[in-house]
Length: 130
Image (tube, rainbow, N blue to C red; front, side, top):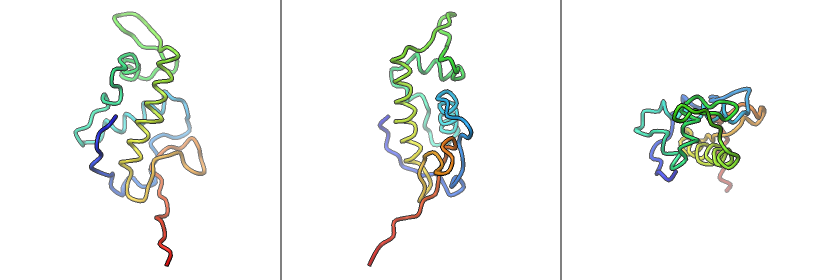
């Protein structure tokens, strides 16, 4: 998604988890996009999906762990290629967007001490050596 980011979250979001104790794509996808959807910045989540209709259906119907969704009354599953695209959307576009809107001196990532804890973690600003 190529949108210019013109805001950062305020300091209330420093060192705050968006998802904890899971590394399942379906859980992370729902948690991260659910958070983005709550932001009152005139930005919807559907832009992350471009022409990926089946992935959008899977997401909008609750991110089933088996990658199943319903279309036209029929149950379907994401293909292997669609799952790979979903991972690119999640770990590329969505995580990059969250990192770009992170509060000042924070980044969006897994916690350095707990790889299943994803959030906005504070880091030391660069020191200027004289």
